[in-house]
Length: 114
Image (tube, rainbow, N blue to C red):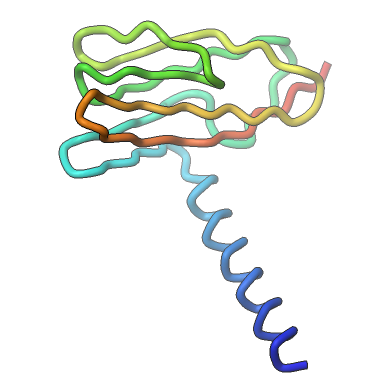
């Protein structure tokens, strides 16, 4: 019984931590000198269009993918790309990496209501 309660408490704690991390309004992930900031959309944004623009800034020379598709990255590290949405909640995963093995990522939820 104690193990079950301990397990439930651990799951609640992990969920609370993930909730705080995933609901930051302007998420920045830094690993040393490597960083990724997703400025738009905000996590849990509700939209009424079937596409949304994902914008942000990564370290210069980073390769950025959004839901597995490469995004165009400017020399200053800024990027912008359109993502198609399905009705309901949509997970958007933004991953920045470089040739030195550094990587940062953000996962956002965008809710499309037709």
